Image (cartoon, rainbow, N blue to C red; front, side, top):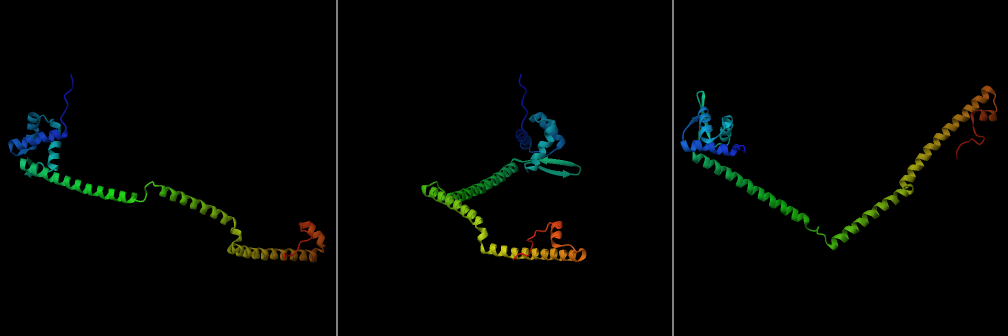
Length: 205
């Protein structure tokens, strides 16, 4: 035997509203907790939750008097609440429709000129060819960079600095050789051999 299916939240809400609409009376929570399970089949454990959801949606009114909370609802209030909800939904639908139309218009506009025509395919092929040529020219330009006047001038400056540095070190070598000859009476050939100085060691022209 199949187990009886319980009521959904919407079914419970609807049945609880029937209690208020049919009696047109004001209740405390304890009253609803007694009536709902017996007359509408709503489980006692869910009565408070269902009632609060109706209050949150303004379908049931609630007022605290002293230490007790009282609840009531009339068909006219539910009707007005549903009308307001319907108006809100219709407004959202209208705004959504407008947004969709605006987006569709933007898409259509973006598609103009992008149809897969022979002319467009030819232009794309030509564009790709130009891009490949540009990369090829960039590669060639990099190869001939050494012939760039600015690069050549920079190299000349670097060569001048390097030549001056070599001259300073050459001065130092000759000065040390001169000092060693005076101090120890060594011959040039002996000094050159001892320190690995080539015979043709001299200033760079």
